[in-house]
Image 1 (tube, one colour):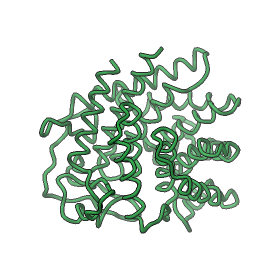
Image 2: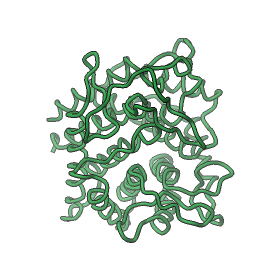
Image 3: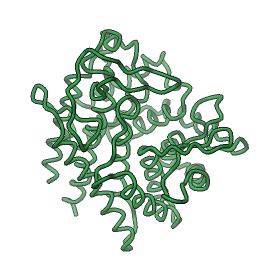
Length: 371
């Protein structure tokens, strides 16, 4: 079973490599993902590049290297990191804490799991998150600099990063507690998006659930505090009930939303493979997480299109993918977020989520095989 998922993950990787990966501005030793396929010129020249999508591309390359270590992929990982820093004006940081958290997570894993180490970058990013903590303003850390919006998409991944890097468990725990006290829906137990100038933003996105699961699992592994595993169990059950009709994680279209279900799958796989504890409830949470990942992956694979022998995934994993064309409305950057292309499958985010899902399915199947 894990070989089946290894093959599908390899196909997903090949599709991204062929359609999206290219040198940045033709420079040797660099690479980034073109944000649309088919690509307009402004995409091929990286006039538009979406920092946080590239961070997830790097994370997927690390997944692939874990699955099947290859010297040439390690080179791709190095090129992706170099391209990212170059395109970001020779800097690791930007104004968005969620963006920086995604890059921090991918860089930390690249160092620990793929042997491509960037200690200076990690230190710099770590300082950004530590210094942004403002309980006196109602946070959490804000979504972006000079902003009063404190949300799960910034605090979740930044908390995971702090738990993994440098073992800043006390701060990671404070962030998890802040989310638990401030952003949990008392009715569904799902995570709300955030709190803006003191009032609750009640949107509930799949990836907010994913990052909170990731944070609580990391803390359950690293501390002896029972509250973390308890929150994981409660949230896995809520996701299964509210966000996965027929066991398939729901989609959110293209643009930034294209990544949401993939991120959820990544951290459900983490629950399935690393949530500690041998009570019946712990086992049930791991089994549910595992089933959501494998069922979503099976569905996404069955509804894919095949172009030039390689998969093209749908924005929604429970319906047919649509093959995109070079015409029609393109993804637009509006008020700090990227809206979808007319055909969401055109967006790199959607294809990355499909790849991430295949790697997640492989990770849980491989863990099963090793038991």
